[in-house]
Amino acid sequence: MAITRLPSAGFSITIRISVTADASAIGRLTTCVGEAGAIVTALDVVDSDPTHVVVDLTCDTADSGHADQVVDALTELDGVDVRKVSDRTFLLHLGGKIEVTPKVALRNRDELSRAYTPGVARVCLAIAENPADARRLTIKRNTVAVVTDGSAVLGLGNIGPAAALPVMEGKAALFKRFGGVDAWPVVLDTQDTDEIVSIVRAIAPAYGGINLEDIAAPRCFEIESRLREALDVPVFHDDQHGTAICVLAALTNALRVVGKRLADVRVVVSGAGAAGTAIMKLLLRQGVGDIIAYDRQGALHRGLPDLNPAWQWLAEHTNKENYSGDLPGALRGADVFIGVSAPNLLTGDDVAGMAKDAIVFALANPDPEVDPREARKHAAVVATGRSDQPNQINNVLAFPGVFRGMLDAHAEEFTEEMAIAAARAIADVVGEEKVNPTVIVPSVFDPRVAPAVAAAVRAAATTPAEPPAADPGPADLPEIAARDAATTQPSTH
Image (cartoon, rainbow, N blue to C red):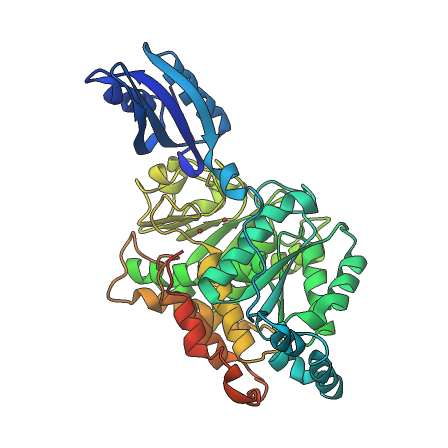
């Protein structure tokens, strides 16, 4: 059975099977799954009698169709009865992935009187007199809104707000797990730019930061720009800035591996949407040698008609030789390929045409722009967005620590200086002496990452507010060290 996509934990299934109790039974099951192109990750005996054994066989498959093929192959074995198939991803999402948990006990009338009426009125009046106290006396101190309109969800496109909610829940869970940040999904049933800006402005008083997520380009650029002008809390579009930070961090270490300088390399970027545009702008800010941007219109170059403002800017600031050909042609002689676009655009032969010691970041998920196995035959360093491949470039390396740092600094905006500082912090967690072709970024579970990024962002905050006054008594618990320690607890696109 030919399987071109790689098996993934995202398509993990558990199959309950009754099989005749002979010495070769279990071996026949695992062999069948392997021959079907899946990967067995667990096998547990749940029941048995003198003639049969019941097992739960868990395996990673490539997609839903492949999972069905694996089940069909097992069903065809003699002496096998497939009783139940469970999709482990759907099981994980039952009832949602996050919840609200009170930080205070409400065990008696005394505590209720302080947490709610009548005691709460005094706190309300204090904030009315001095609105800045909201950061000290409410959830605003540590809360982020994860805002989407569902117009560009993962690689799924415009699937709407309700269908986007599982992704936003996951984002909120990542904020808490890795940054100690309380985040909440805000999914909007509108894709009108003015309405989105108006709604986010209206809800902003409850939040210390706004994380825009999965909003289609070019509308996302205007929404971010207008909100940054209107609000006094940081506005961060993770599809842009989070991706750009992680790519710059990974590229910093990849260039260390191959012994090249950013100023000397030519980069080809496939995908000039939110992520690609932010990546290119950050690389330009860092002095990259040259960039060719490629999207549905082809290579963006001067003279290309009907470009939106974002693409027009790229055409004017990249592509020094004004190349106008196809993507494989752009890749010939290039030092770096960064893909944030669509699967299977390139072959191993295309990568072979790149410069010596080439770097390939094929980040389309779940299927990269080029098969990483083929790319590794020709490139010195290969990275993807997949968790089952070396060098996973994942935004979770950036956004929890970035927001942790901005919240701690009481920052009023996100800046390029913060982005560059965060990228350097991520790269330096690996350490120059430890980088190699398969280790250019730290693991997303490395407990050093979020604290390092948070510290770098705090230091880069250009106009941090005055530290909050001490709360009465010992209630001022969320110190930086305590929050950083929370990211080390075991637990996670």
